[in-house]
Image (tube, rainbow, N blue to C red; front, top):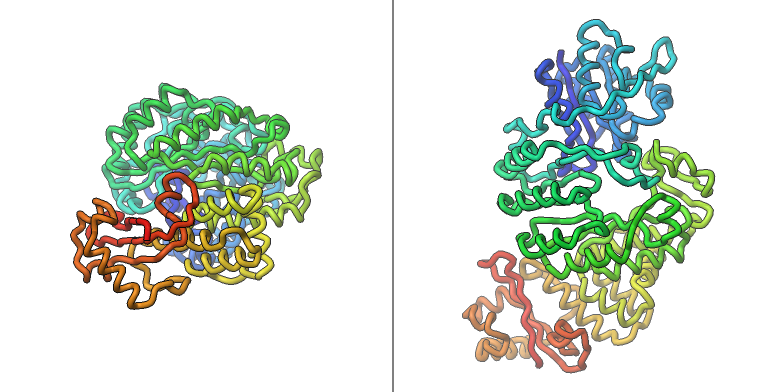
Length: 581
């Protein structure tokens, strides 16, 4: 029996952990299983053609909110060209409202709900043999046009699930993609907007199996491993053992974890800040809201003071990047409350601040109680809110603009120094900067127009000029600084006209080479020739003391020389040098 396990990932760089679990569990009895991963941007006909040419008897799709609407046309077309194929769907998106999915998708023969390993294997056994589908726990199907949903299957014993990463040929194709891994299943918390809250308790894979898997992935050259454990640090001793193992064996692989920051123990923080190599760990921290009333409504326990302590200590270590999440549209949080939440979290200066919008996921308590809070949301995935009783659609639209500009100007780290200066000197709060700029961006119609890097600087400059900000010359100087230091190689063009003519430029370059020590010992040590400096260096005159500002945050109106070098012989070869002019 030929079996194809398929899914549509959001991006090519993503990979499916679920498909690899299903194959690992079933292949001992069904060796002819192929994994096919596509993306939501692939053409449906191309997907169907590729699957069709494998001559499958069974095709199973893994379904999520990000791919279900793109998967449906594939299912319908596949059934048209191969009516006898058995089509199975599973995953979180179709594990709830099963009767509705069966009626909506008549081309689907079976829905697997809940954990899929044992259920999928049992279902394949019945398809191949007696077809006693009522004996398979954890599935739904139509019989005589009526939905049949069998009882849920007990949770699988995690010690009985084979590793999803035993196939060395498969691993060869994953080196430059994100590999997902889990040490545990379940979540101890009961947040009403999250599917993980439905499964009570946390179960762990054996530590030795986890270490063997991780070492196999590391040795295979996997560059990024993302742990999908809902709260990785809930078990302190387990988390510490994994952290220590990765520190000892990392080989420069990057590991990303979802942690709950307010329960992070001080001794764990101390260990990581002392022993973790720089940049191998990334922490994703779901803050969602700092409104205590909102957190109480969604049954989310959070101590923001302790969370802040953790985030600040990690940031001060300079070793671990932090990605903090917010959710706009939670019950009881209006526009002004969300503004405060945003400002509270932005003040922690995370490397990335992701602003998302509440999605009314199937099976969650918040969806079941939608009427209580006046929710109106999209009928189809991703079920994002349109408005509720305290947040209007106008508010949602405006916060969307904040999200857009936040991604371009903060999370992309194109001009961190400039943004922080503007917020501190010209705007009431971080949220107000992003909101005003987002509104301006929309008013100019830029949302419908593509952009290059230079355009981002030009558009910010236009916004600042129209707003008539204070100390415009300082803002422009910092924008030049951010632009030049943000390149790996000497930029071929700039978004401004240089303040120096050719004669002045040549004179300054000559003085730099005659007295290289004035630019600092590091530049002096380069021993560059005039030709090298012209080829790999850029200079600009700024109207303030850049070095003083970077060190103290104080603006002194003293002209300074900015020199940025792009050394082709050094990793991360962009360096900034400055002195008074």
